[in-house]
Picture 1 (cartoon, rainbow, N blue to C red):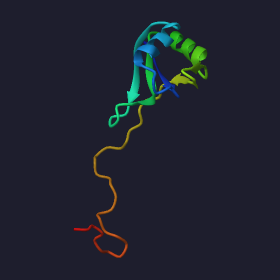
Picture 2: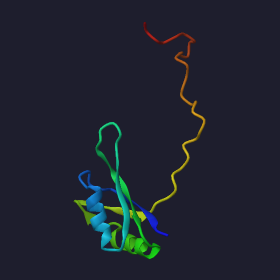
Picture 3: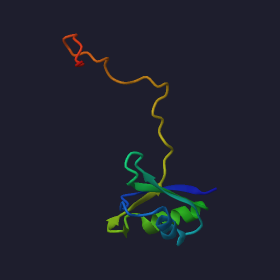
Picture 4: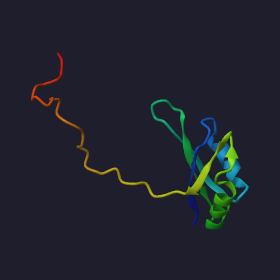
Amino acid sequence: MGKKLYVGNLSYNVTASELQTLFSQFGNVQSAEIVMDRETGRSKGFGFVEMGQDSEAAAAITGLNLQEHGGRHITVNEARPRESRGGGGGGGGGGGRDRRGGDRRRY
């Protein structure tokens, strides 16, 4: 079973293909992705790489963590599971009223 790696502090110009090439020197890269901002379509400066074997992932961490790539010192470590953002919808703030109890919306 492969390991998913977090890759941070990437240059905003790095592509998934470039990430795959960078990590392939340490073994079989099953997938490489750059996380993009939904609104702007630009890179958020981090991504994920999935290596084929745990030993390959460990070698990639050792070989690439804090190394310079694209003018930046990248961070490479084992990805953690995504934290729950809480379920059930709802949330949100107040109901449109200020402290005096009045409605602050303007018509």
